[in-house]
Length: 285
Image (cartoon, rainbow, N blue to C red; front, side):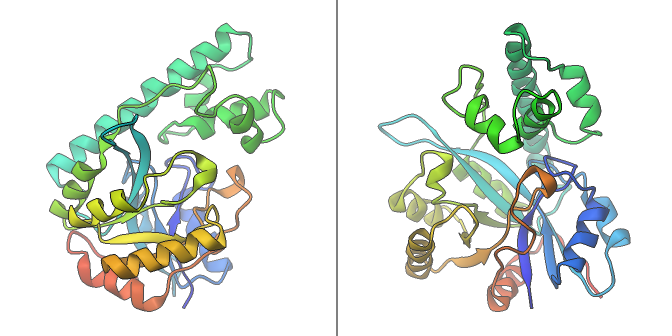
């Protein structure tokens, strides 16, 4: 079985609709795919009807969180949440708050860019998002379309990185609270790309151990942004902490060059996720 548990559709910052994403997954030879859009379940209602025969679809989400070290600034971290109840009231309210944070942050970034002469418009970016959760990739795409940068990656390297004068931080969920909310909604929380040092600061082993004690159930180990040594380290840490190990592409359509199915999850680990998730179920034959 080929199982990819981290993909994004146009409901957040991918470029393919949920239905088209499922078609792409089947064409790539996947047996299982999870849709994990940022801070939203808006793509879930179409999954069952749009699912190609023979493809199992796992409803999920990637949740924007923060780890708060005792002696340094907060670190951005992401939780992959699988098979939770989308109607859980507290988790639903927190998802809505995070989406509002993204919108406010995005508008502030675009306003600053426009004030400095960059040809971008918040209204046009929102319009082109087609109702998705607007984030920095949408701004990057607008900069590409305007001829300011060569690619989405180039936009992040030059104008949208964390140390850029245009960067605006969000008020994300404390990751321990995020874990508790996902668990309360019957879901399975997995720490996404935890050693992706190319993205910025990472939390380290002691923090991951503390998150496991707080209810974290898995680590995303095989990810395109993890080097071989980082994958090996995380795999050993997961074994020490008795955590589920996942692998995935973090596919974003044409917003990133990584193809769907670039990294995959072992079937036994996927079965562990299915056994642990009680808030909702996968769609399959």
